[in-house]
Image 1 (cartoon, helix red, strand yellow):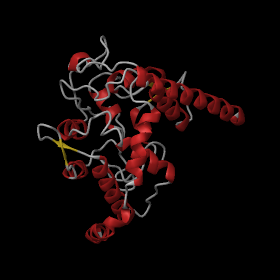
Image 2 (cartoon, helix red, strand yellow; image 1 turned 180 degrees about the horizontal axis):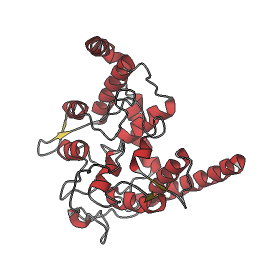
Image 3 (tube, one colour; image 1 turned 90 degrees about the vertical axis):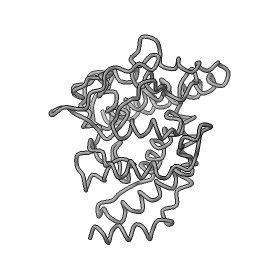
Length: 285
């Protein structure tokens, strides 16, 4: 059975990546959505009008993923964060953030596999997504490592503010932006400090690339805008008037996201932060 599942997963992944390439090519020849019309009509957030925000209540489930948490906080997926059908999530990821359909289906299928569940039949609670070294990983931009904070729904505000302090870009109005180089620098610092302070630190190549892919949503989906990101990362709330900065008709594909992921990852220099990491380790000791 395990062998058959592996074969089935391989065929599924191949079909998803083929679909993703076709969507990428379609983005090259189709017209982009006009500003203000990225979120589909009939979906929560159309025209920038997001449903009421409510911070999580006692007993509700949240995860290590700010995007999923924000959707729950706005009631786009169940506010409880519990008993969520895998099959219902891709459409909401696609419509809320304008990730491509191929990306949205792939990540949800991957999560089901990670949890040894059936994508078509089972449900999950958001906290299950925080399985260590599944999708969740050490050296996060917004969370302490699992060894230091087992509840990965908990945001670490100093990390969030430090992220924004690295912003060196400016838009035409002078508002701060996080550049790709900024993101490589902060990831290098986080990895060096995590390695120094967490005796159980682990970050395999897969999770390094996954970390850089997550980070690459900052200049793509979120347009690098610190003012928006502060609300989204610190409160896990979608600002009124916000829409995905990706206006391509088929959304942000896996292929296109990787065009940002690789420069982010290749620009990371952990050695540049060795001195800072030793200082942090000494303070903790």
